[in-house]
Amino acid sequence: MRWQAPQQASGFSLCSSNSRNMTTKQDLEAIENQISAIQVSSHGETVNPVLAHGGFKIVEKGRNWGWLLSGFISLNILLLGIAIVCGSVFNKIQISSSHLLIFLILIVILTTVWMVYYKIHTSRVFNAVLYKDSHAGPVWLRGGLILFGVCSVLMDIFKIIYYVGRIHCESPVKIAFPVVQALFVIVQTYVLWVHAKDCVQIQQIITRCGLMLTLSTNLVVWMMAVTEESLHQTVAPVDPLYNSSSNGGHKSNVESQGRAGDSECKCIHDMCDVFEKAYFYLYPFNIEYSLFASAMAYVMWKNVDRQMDEHHSHNLRFSLWDVLIGPVAGLIILVAGLATFVMYEVDVAKEEPKKKEEALIMHYIMNIVAILLMSIATLIGCIIFRMDKRDQVSGKSPTRSLDVGLLVGSSLGQFLICYFTIAAVLASGVQGRINGLDLTNSILTVIQLCLQNAFLIKGLHREPFKETETATVYANVMAERERDPERRSSSIVPAHTLPIPLMLLQGRLSWKRRILKEICAFLLFCNVILWIIPAFGARPQFDNTVGSDIYEFQTWAAVVNIGMPFGIFYRMHSVASLFEVCLTS
Image 1 (cartoon, rainbow, N blue to C red):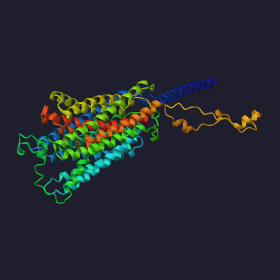
Image 2: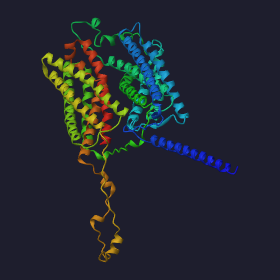
Image 3: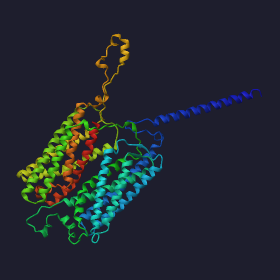
Image 4: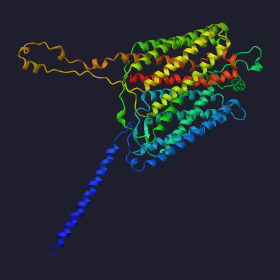
């Protein structure tokens, strides 16, 4: 009996030691999980420890299912929208514009409801958004979205006033759609401004489907706006062999059909014509707004379930004092381009052959000078990038990939028009000054597009400059005097001990940085004027008949109306990319 107690005690101590070992092992595993949770991969994404221990397959399966389902939703909405838009253009009897507007009202209301739900849900749930993509939705992009959104709302207001004056002979749907679209633009602009950087971690399938619905809705609205703008700007040349009854007069056959009933429908107030012209001038802003919103929705879709490391962001600084020559030269090109554009529109509207020829010559010369200077500046920028020792950006970024993809893809529109023009002018024998200038303009545009794409792609993939600040040593003058008695009576301090102002050190840019900023600023203003001229109605492709003579008018109109919207978007997207490259330089 005396030995039983020690045995029990030893057994108890054995159990306690085992329990301590178990506790120690669990603590070590917990510490390892915490360490692995804060490890960052080479792509800037945080590694989730749950995924490393068997949960990866489940999460990956759910992610693929969400991508697949949202992709199907987007594809079906886009294809149905394309079918209805084309039907409303080429067959206005069976598929009228009212049918298209009803379809748009349905998807716009559905998208607005989802965005309101997304805002409420992410605000109430604490861990809905754990990470933010620092590269997504920069301030200048969201600022552009607000600017285009305000213009889109103004366009809808002008449309409402215009169609209210024709309510007795127009479908009420044409009044309902601008109202719904204005509400949609306001809600979407607010949601994208607040949530553009979100990396949503909950309800991933619903979020992906909602973002793809938003993307598809904006693209269908963009297609409708581009179609209306193209039909409004498409003017067929007058053929003397046909009278007005067979050729439809000045306008193209499609537009003349759309305007056939205008003479029978009288406006109840005198401002209908003013508001009609006003909302057509605001169409370019609405077109750009839809594309901006589509791009931001796509980046949010890519960032769903993405885990970011926020320490990889860079604080970029922009100062107007860094550059001078580039903005001044760019503003000169911008003002000259605006003056040329106004004179071109006035002279072409007179429909006098001599005035039209002078307007075309002036337009081509202006474009050639601007594009030639842009090509030279871009070539210098590419050479500097070649000499640059900055590292390439490492890791995947949906924003950067989208920027490059949109840049290259949208430039195909201008490539299409340029190569068709080159072939048409060469086939016609390069007769006259206008055709010679048109050929030169097209060739230089192709060269400039290639150089600018290369410059922007290189710039977007470079790390921001890291300034090596010169160390400034502040000497203690009193201590120096105490150690050296000879200096006690002297008030002179050695030059190397004087403090150098830090702002002076930081304000000096290297010559490569300054030249890159000057080039970006110059190219930015030039791309702005090259966006304004076609976006607000200049169509030298139709005023110069070489294209329609070679390809026939229907084919040439299709080429221009397909390529022009992409070319317009390319210039605006280039402005945004150039601003980003300027910041990182």
